[in-house]
Length: 229
Image (cartoon, rainbow, N blue to C red; front, side, top):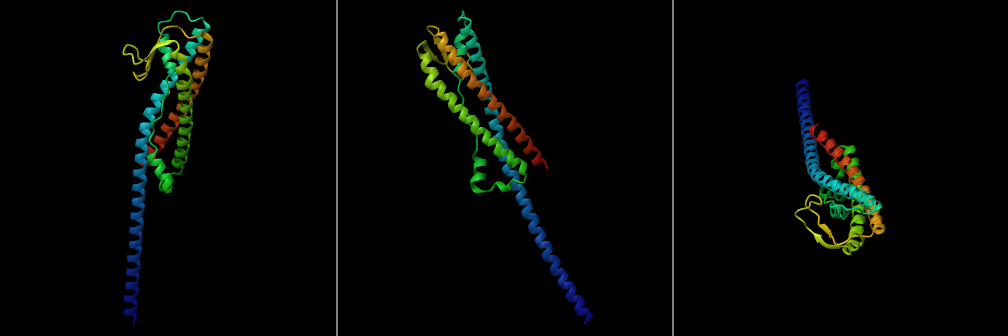
């Protein structure tokens, strides 16, 4: 009887250990799969953010050029528009507009599919939401700048320009923007208004891009730490 009970106990223990081991292996595999999926998502987000960073840095410098040009043109008007061989360049920089071409595919897919919980780090999720909210601010500002330039400033400048196009001898910014060639100076009062108005928006946009760059640097840093853990 004792042998039977002992044998039964051993068999029960073996079955129990087998089930426990099977459950552990299953749980381990699920945990490993979740970790791999988390890392795949983070790697894709990281690549997207790297491209965003390059574009944002380029756009920040463009708006900084526009702001500095607005300040210079305003002071030029205050001084009575003295002879200045570079004024066409600064007027052309005042017409600079940008469009942030960022990749939100991975982020939008996570949101729409309800898979955001696949990311293990709650701080990264929170920072992601903040980052893409900030992008909305940047894009709204860009729309305003584009409308001001296309609907107001360019029609104004057309009265005083004989040409607005690419000029290989003058680099407005990164060889990506056209140059005005004036046949006469625009009126001081109106030009002063546009210089201050557009310069204000350019300064606002450059500040927004500064905030965006700060966020993307921090987010990429957080992702690197998470991937290395």
